[in-house]
Length: 194
Image (cartoon, rainbow, N blue to C red; front, side):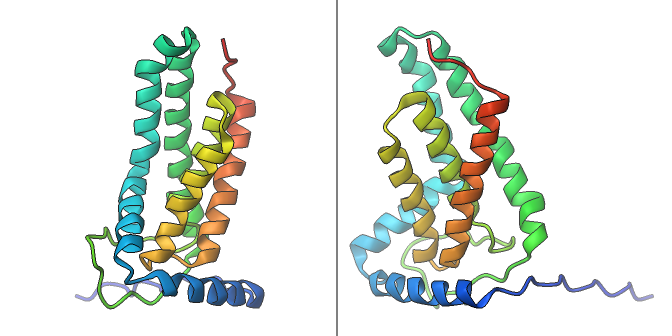
């Protein structure tokens, strides 16, 4: 007895301007590959971005020491809120959003100089980049220093291009989606600073 054929997902066509952007940015990214320092940094950032580890770690550290440093007892609640929002954002992006687009990933690199968890979901949007955009928005609102958080979020997003698992437009789109979801969450669930 044979089973029914599983339908192949329909891939959303990539608009020509997006394809040109990806080719240009990918050309720039390929120049840094095989540079030992760039590889070490990119693979480390990519690993820290897995499952939003870095963002949850920052929130946990802020929850533990932030109130003592600032004298603001509400800081712990805001750190917990950021992690809850981060989890919801990742569920939305890595579930229905990726299923909606079904974009093919870039041609895999022949070899990787460091360990890399290979994703199996759609290439668009980058979950690492959306997490970075979301976290940077929330941290900027709660703790200030937006240039620090957005630089870190962008670096983690770009690391996914460097390691060869995302197109540059996946990262740009992911950042914008993460910023948008965080902005909505800020309006729905806002905790004032002490």
